[in-house]
Amino acid sequence: MRKFTSSLLLATVALCVLSPLTAQTPAPKAAAKKGSATSTGSWSPHMTTSAKIDDNRVILVYGSPNLKDPKKDGAVRKVWGGLVPFGKIWRLGSDEATLLITQKDIVLGGTALPAGAYSLYLQPEADGSAKLVVNKAVGQWGVDPYPTATEFARIALKKTDLSASVEQFTMSVKKEGTGGMLRLAWENIEYSAAYALKK
Picture 1 (tube, rainbow, N blue to C red):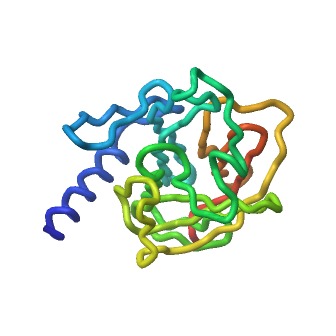
Picture 2 (cartoon, one colour; picture 1 turned 180 degrees about the horizontal axis):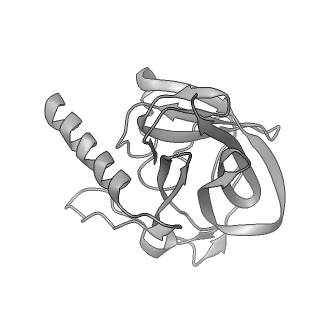
Picture 3 (tube, rainbow, N blue to C red; picture 1 turned 45 degrees about the vertical axis):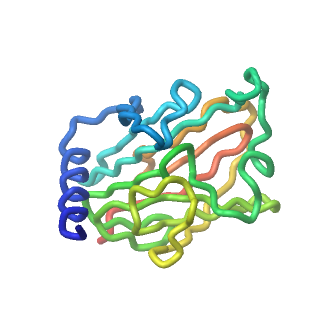
């Protein structure tokens, strides 16, 4: 079973890396199985974004929830300290935990991250700080339960207050300066961390 899972993961990574990914595009919806959780559809589309910097591609696959509540006729929700509680690990999006794939070793926010696939989570705090939680287990459904044993690192993020509200949770990886920048934004806050190819 472990050999099959490893082969499946390698095949998934290869497909993602070799696909001609451009800017953010909706990821294909998984087929619903009887009794299983399904995507929340247009309220939380699945997105894929990537950037190639210094001959290395970094890919993010994530669910993009909306400020509006699909269960309450589109009422606007409070995100930070509400939908996303302070002091707890959040799945960083909707549905499955966010997936990060890097073709080569990188340094993300000062932390060395070997080439491969990881799940990303976020732990925001009431004081405005937040840490990106990197985990070696992939394919997790949210944080129920959170795989503590495979946690790889926690990376401090830079917080920026936004002048305009971001309705749809958004993540990006883009070239900035001599390396790249990973950003996530929702409601009135953006968190970010710089990354570069490990020398």
